[in-house]
Length: 209
Image (cartoon, rainbow, N blue to C red; front, side, top):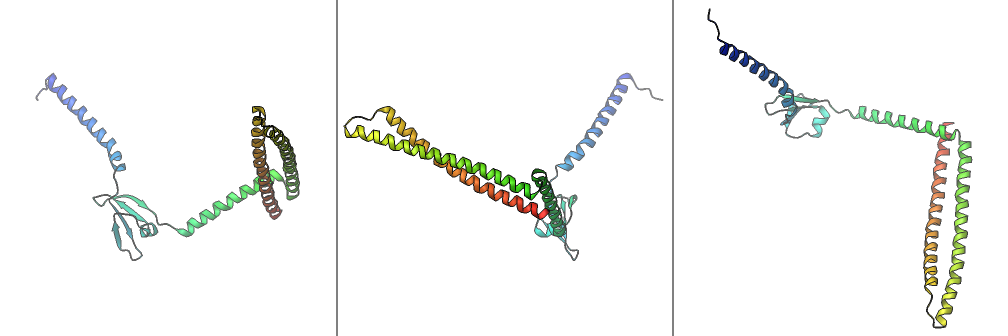
């Protein structure tokens, strides 16, 4: 029986370790390589069982279901046929669930159509009050402007320069009037939007009652 010297034993042991590492790395890299393989062909079978190959996915692929193949014609992925009836049913069910959730939120927030009607009246009365206040402020600003313009006219008739303070007052007065009109328009839009939204809520609550 031949005895192995110490260097030979070490070399043999070292070789086994290298071989085990190579096997482990190879096994680890296989799934990574498989995941990175890109499809080269797409195959589907029609209603007659005939195989159809192409490099792109067509509507028929989606309709019948198809397989993604690599360059060696090996299947790397399978996709089930698209069922429009099932998809439509799923969308309809999802829409119904969302409507139920919305109805529950309405009931929790308003309780009944009668309470919602009361809240609508309170909300619209509040906005209407803001509109009246804004209109009064605009009227006052316009009256002030008439007075300031008269003062400006007196200086002009006398051939005198209009003071900077009066010029600035007229400038700011004009800006306040413009902003006031914008705010008034915004309040009117808010009134219409709130009324429309409450009408929709009340109508829905009456349907649920």
